[in-house]
Length: 313
Image (cartoon, rainbow, N blue to C red):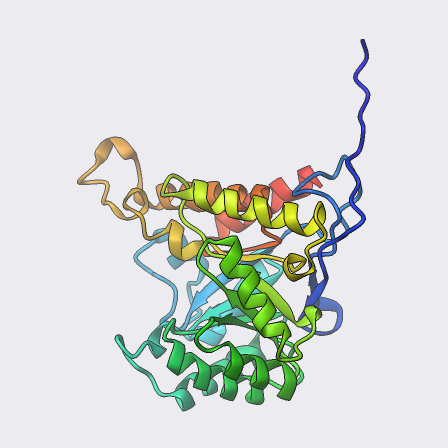
């Protein structure tokens, strides 16, 4: 008996969110099919890939990163290099040094750096904060003001600071925000509702529902994303019809398989290749589960996942 394909059609769809401006702008979301189900209906905006740049500079202890960013001696120069050569669709600047438990750089220093990077890049800009809710609320307010007209995505607004970030970033300065929750569909929905109650339109918010490196409790990530997409498309839950962005790099490069030295585990092979493999595996897994964008660190990972997406959609 010949196989007969029966497309699964949904009347609902994921809302679109545009990052950046002009010809380089990228659109997240917009699909009305399950992740990568291009055989059911065309996917207007395939998953996008961002490349991560730390405000502390690339890790030059990793040979591939050192070679890729050779000669790019400032954070702005590294961001420009990433735009020119990585193949990514956007750049993600991570403000690690702003962490009060780390270098605790001042808000003015961080804002000045963001302005330098924004002037250097030709792709849309995503900015991750220090993960300190109090400082990020103040930091994103100033960044949103300084980068007016750039249409940047500020990650992330959490339950404890979403009011300050949403009002400053979206309503005052027309930026975009990421709603960050901790791998739980109910927490994700609750935060989305709270943000919408502030008058923030759905075209201004993406979800960061959390992640984990493949093999490290990843089943919770996959099931959460699967339930979110099912609720959004099959059940028409408007509170969950937002695109998902997933910072993969931090999780993938912080596990033992990516960090352990080759001297300690000679059978595992080169540490850099292990990190790349972990990053690619995790990125493909979250895209398959429903993420509309992933943030990666290594140029080889960016190139590999970009090629895979092109083949599938």
